[in-house]
Length: 363
Image (tube, rainbow, N blue to C red; front, side):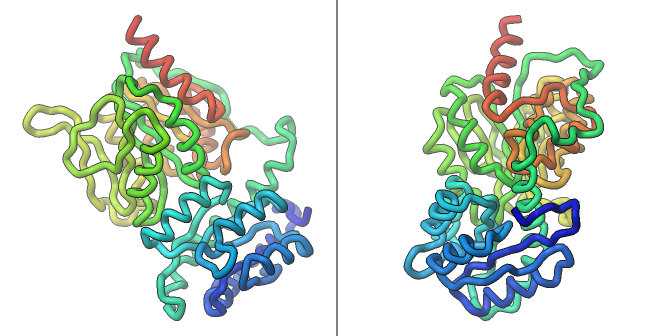
C-alpha cells in the first residue's frame, strides 16, 4: 500500500481517458499539486486494468465514455479485481449522467463533470473539484485500512440534548454529498409507502444529474421520490430532491401558510448549490422542534449550520457514523460542534426515523 497521507508520501493517480487532450489536461492538473503525482495514464479499459495491477495507484480517474469496454464496465472490473477509489469523469448530458449514476451505485467514489468539447480549454474549471475529490478519495482508502479501534474520534463526540422538548416530527431534512447516491439508494427503500411526513434531500450533484437521480430513487422506493419544483406543497410519503444549481428552502405559502418549496440561486457565492445549510436552516425556522435533521457521508462542512439550527430549536439531529461513511467529513464537523442527538450507522438511520415518528405520535 503506497498511501499514507500523514507521512508525506504523495497520492498516486491513474488517469484513464480515450482522449489524448483530456489525459494531458487532467494529468497536468494533478501533477501541479504538491501532494499528488500521476502514476500513469491509459487510453482504454484493458490498458487501465494492466496498469492498476502493476502500479497499484491510490486513486483512478475514469472516463465514462470509452470505446470497447466503457467506463461502467471498467469500473466493475476494477471493483471486482482491484478495489480502490474511482472518480468518474463525465460529460453532464442525460446519456452520460445516467451511466454515471449507475457507476456511483456500482461503487464509484464520486464524479466530476467535464465539458463536451474535447478541445475546450474550459476543462480547467474542474480543477478544484477534481483535486479535492482525489484527496478525499485517498483519505477514504487510507481510513478503511485503519481498524475502527485506532480511528481518532471527533474532538467532541458526545451525544447531547437541547433544552427544548421534542415534539411530533413533521419533516425529515437530509444533507449528503460524496457517497450519497449509493447511501440514499440503500436507505430510502426502507421507508414504508405510508410514511407519515415529507423528506427533503440535498445531495451535492452536478447540474443535469438530479432529475435522473430522483427518478432512479423513485423506481427503487415505496415512497414517492421526485425532483423538487418551485412552489409545490410538501406532503407525506414523498421525498423531494433539490435540483442541482438551485437552493431549496421551505417557506410558508402566502395564501394559507402551508409549507411549500422555494427554489432560487441566492446566495450565489455558496460553496455548494444546492446548499444543505440553506435547506436545513429554513426547515428549522418553519418547523422548529418538529424537524428531524440527518447529516450523512460527504466532505466539507455544509450542513453544520443547518444541523445546529435544528438542534437549537429542539429537533432530532442524527449523524451517520464514521464506519458507514464513504467520507466522514460533514457528520464529523457536526459531531465536533456537539449538535448531534444521535450517531447511527447508515442502516440504522431509517429505522430510527420511523421509530421517532411513530413513537412520538403514540405518545
